[in-house]
Image (cartoon, rainbow, N blue to C red; front, side, top):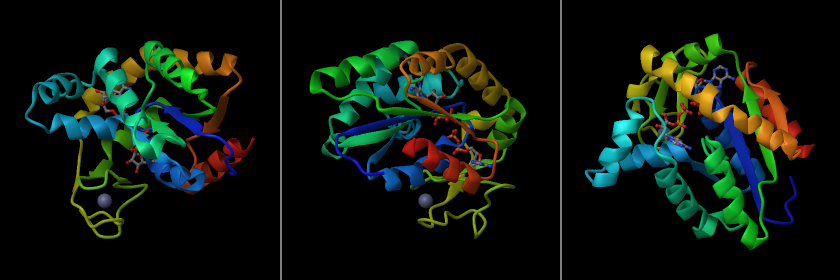
Length: 220
Ligand code: ADP
Ligand code: ADP
Ligand code: ZN
């Protein structure tokens, strides 16, 4: 995709929809940084600080981290030099307040959200994906025991890092994360649809087919 101005693209979808998996490829195609709120929170969660403990108390239950903390973290990330020409947002915004804060931050710089790709996946498939997900501790890449196994068991194809299962991917916590998604994040679909920015992609297809459909949606 040729880029004449800063390009801000949002990947919207439920936990397990395949946002992280697709973001690796799409951010390269667009030539912009990949900003994942989940990855940023996982790094903070490990730290022995007040913020780390606060994030952990929400994250581990599958609840959303409060908007003020989340918005501050993302807007600070967007001020880094690699985001000046745009970025691919994965996992943010997740509430109406976050979406409005993002718009308000971009506007004075004559920037805007250009495109929102909504990855739709059925609830039963989301639970299947979350329960078999393994992540690289080093680079954050996602694998799945059945649909996307690593070449070598327990090791990341991209960097050789050790793979682990997220504490919030247990069936019980995954179910409450989906409830949070339906209640707090789904309204964003209307918000961006009304602005003519939303493209829906069938995320229930194979990883390659989703990649192809997303490239088409980005060109449209
Ligand atoms: P998200 O970032 O939206 O939470 P991930 O990209 O981590 O989702 O994907 C969730 C799980 O589903 C991972 O285990 C991943 O390997 C797997 N996965 C991603 N896309 C697909 C797909 N199109 N088909 C089957 N499994 C997939
Ligand atoms: P998934 O895509 O599987 O839901 P993420 O890695 O995006 O997971 O997010 C993991 C957790 O990090 C969330 O359950 C929540 O606690 C926190 N989090 C991530 N993004 C946000 C956000 N935009 N607002 C509030 N909390 C967030
Ligand atoms: Zn890795």
